Image (tube, rainbow, N blue to C red; front, side):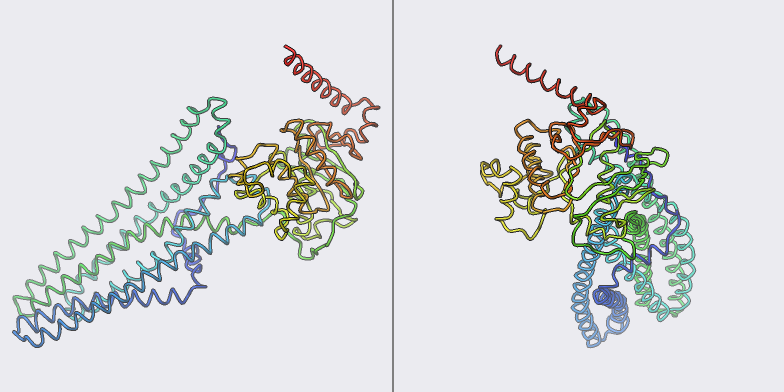
Length: 605
């Protein structure tokens, strides 16, 4: 069962190393510069101490063991012991600080992403798969955090270790040190050759990871539909193909990363062999001591190991950059609906509402509303009916400013609503959807979501007005009953009543019901209907209706077809006209009567 969003194609990022992205990654640590300074200072001291260990070993061989100077040997051993204690302390410091910094950067990034997601318009979520977003917030932020902490730590350790090694090698024998210097350009060329190939593959891995996450999400949330239509095998085949594609990309990335390290090791072995040969010849001529040869070879290994480690760090850096590009692309996404510079807050939306020649489309060549004009008086109840896809929900979405007109104007109290702050509009809305969403937690917490500072008494009063109180108190834990993820532990009707209570508690200026009774039984429909009537008193209300019995008392009923108002009037006026609404109403009425007769007949039998 393919999600249309699975066809989403994310931005293709450049294939070469992106220095700007790397610097932006490092900038994530600027607010924690004390931790950065602390762990960098610690790792520098550890690297220098590691280099000095080898130099002390040389002195112990030449000045203590070969010279038969026991006092000097013990003195150097004491220095060695003190250096071990010092190194242990600073090692603890850099590991602790790096770990803490990495977690802090991940926390900051995830918070920034979550905050930004709250600001993005519906259009962003319409075109972006949930799996792509989840990958950015979870695994990608972890990679960025690891690069800022452990990646920076490893790079610093490697660079300082290389510099320290060269310092002591030149101090011992500059001719042998030059041989090692000649090896470095070869290692750099190898890194340049591999870096582009590795980065391309890791970017492909990250892209496929997003698609796999999206596929997981789609199949888990749609498991009932999958089983009902016997789609298990086709879904498995689709997922297997996607997973195999991810496997191939990961295999290529792993193969290149694995090849990088042996190539570096071969070059390192050649360098050590050349130095050992030249050092042996110099030792015969008395130009270098035995301790000097031992120390020099140790320094080569000490220097080349960080170079080899840089290969691993470089591969990790490529992965982190590929992840960071996607994290930053989300952070940089601009909401299509946002406040104008001169937008002002308002205390109330209890005013007339005007749609003035409004056009709207989701796709440019597929208009949804065309020249839509409507004036709604404050306190009026407007019902929207018509075939699916006619534009009813779009009218409500535009009213809520989840989207904005492509042409025309919507006004509150004669004022263009783009001049009113978004939070002023959204905070004055009460919305009950066809498929209400409940958050994990208790019933009380879900109702209080309508107004977070509400007391328990106010929560229960809202539930009474919505008709939800009776079923809630019959539950074992009452208002403290857990609803489960998405409200899965409750029935559809119970979720609707809680959603209605949440809207009641919000005390909105504009009340919206989007086919809220289309999936509930008659008893629950009557409860919702009574709650709706209580909510509508004194408020401007918009009701999208599937069951026409719920809108008979609306001030005006609009029959919407292809984005236009085909008929408008009260229930009785439209029935007298015997037009589209009359046909729809009588058809639905006949069906309900037939179902009722069939039910009675079944009972009699």
